[in-house]
Length: 89
Ligand SMILES: [Zn+2]
Image (cartoon, rainbow, N blue to C red):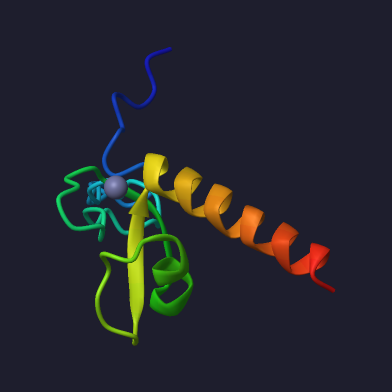
């Protein structure tokens, strides 16, 4: 017996793979766009929409990032507005 020996040169999938840094999610982690707020945003919405809930937001174009709390407030504010619209219909 004793044929061959340790023959382990270059088996496998071609050696070292470069491990790319794991990117965390696809959501841009911008700060909240409401003046005075420093939270990380969870959503970004059209500026005109956000202004309906937050008068302190200036400008009309582009998008505004909202943190979780402000997004909740935004939804609340716009919801009641819609209900009013419905009542006046
Ligand atoms: Zn905020």
